[in-house]
Length: 163
Image (cartoon, rainbow, N blue to C red; front, side, top):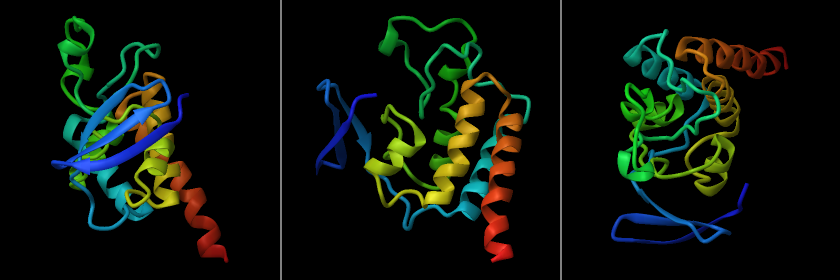
């Protein structure tokens, strides 16, 4: 995976450039404070409820997932009934519900997103959302992705409770 570099914000747009010199622009709407695990759980629940637990975003696990709905101009075509043209991925939708916008044009994992935008997500929220993203990317329903993430949340919370 290419390394990412950030450039200065100009006119409300952050420039993110990979080492392969591909540049994407992302809106700079941002959360007031980093999303916590507790907040990530609420946001993921809301995103899943909005589409339904049985919603499948990625019909072909070989296809790429995006934080925003794909546009025909990106590829020159979109397969008929491709859910990726209707909505962003489950994490993209959860972050949008938080009022975050910087992730929209970002191409990379949740952990890469958190590295580039260090004020977006707390560490446990990254771990939680990363699990949901991985399950979705395998072609699982959003309900299944959330269930897998909830198992991670239980593991993250247990040491805090026991300690």
